[in-house]
Image (cartoon, rainbow, N blue to C red; front, side):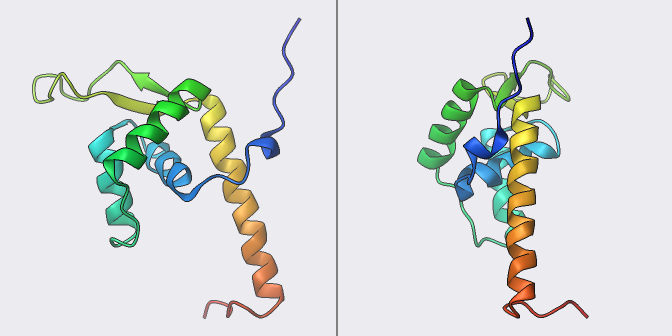
Length: 120
């Protein structure tokens, strides 16, 4: 008997920290510092994930099955073996996509209500 797919809406909305972590991992495997650096760069420093928030979130995401540890390293000879790399699971990717769609719907509504100017 196959298990029914979860209703992704039950996981939403995501906290900003969790969504930023999932977005960073959507591009590929990263270690914790790499996730933090990607978020800081992508947001021009507006969002900074402190170590407590980052690793507490990673621990929960691992426990929930949204991310998983990656065994492979791009270049094991150059990489610190103590670093743990993470990747999105299928469930994590689906949840991130559902959150992106939810946020896109909100942006569309804000445009309809003239709260956001249309792009030129």
